[in-house]
Length: 219
Image (cartoon, rainbow, N blue to C red):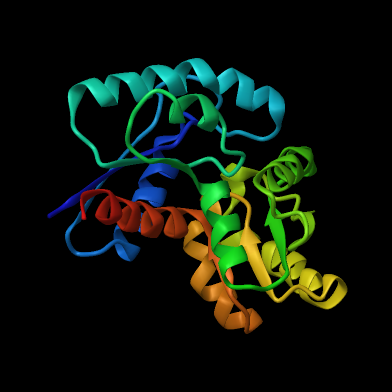
């Protein structure tokens, strides 16, 4: 049985959606189909509460259109702030996961203390609130900002993100790093190798959880 996963990037940057899709496909099982989409308008990136609020109309419209045009077994909201997640969970009877939600659950399952490395400082309070709401405050040590804007994540800014992760290991005594942005998804393997510790990408974690949940629901 194939697993059909829809990934919605809530921002309007198609190139970022393509990168998220590529990472998801690399880590998905052979019998998993990945479809990735984004709204055509709204913020080009989501950095803080104002962007999150502005993206909701496009996110909800994109979600409804996708649900009406095709059949999916699970949905992933590919914004680390888990923007609009609680409302979308109530609209369908299939799993709807946020990549922040998935990453924190994966970190907790490793049984280690973790720090989160995100983009800008404006995102830190939102992520901290989600960590507390999900019940992982005891395992989360700190949320750190690399001060790299979402759309600037890439080879040129890798060292900024790595340096903040290194500080998390040395100063926070973190045993694992959670990457706090979907745009960092393709950096996880390199960071894990360079840092010598688990580095958790929410896109990869969410794909794995969706595959498992689909199988559990149909068993």
